[in-house]
Length: 140
Image (cartoon, rainbow, N blue to C red; front, side, top):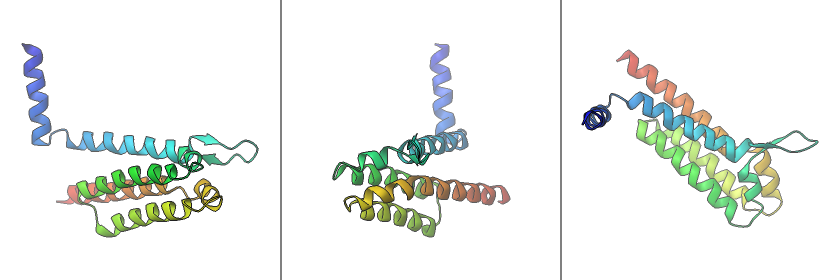
C-alpha cells in the first residue's frame, strides 16, 4: 500500500510540474548522448577524427537520411516544447537539412558527414537556448 501512495505522490508531482526541471535535464542528457553516438562515437584510425553512426550508416543509400532526420526532429521538438525561439528552431532545421541534402550525395556526402556534425550542433543550440530560458524564468 505504501508503494501505491509513493507512486501517486510521484505522479502528482509530475502532473504539477514539480519534477519538470529534472525531467528537462534528463531529456537534454539523452539527446546529448544520442548526438555523441551519431556524430562522434569512434575515431578514425591514423587521422584521429571523430565519427559516429550517422557517417557510417550514411554509406548505405537512404539510411543516412533517416538517421539524420529522426534525431533532428526530436531536437527541434524539444526546443519547441520548452518554448524556444523560432530562430533557434530554424537554425536546427537548417543544420539537419544541410546534413540531409549534402549527405545524400554519394561519396561527397560521406566525407561531409565526417566533418559537419549536425546533431552536435543542434544539441549545442538546444543547450544554449535551455540556459537562456532558465535564466529568463529565474528573472520572472
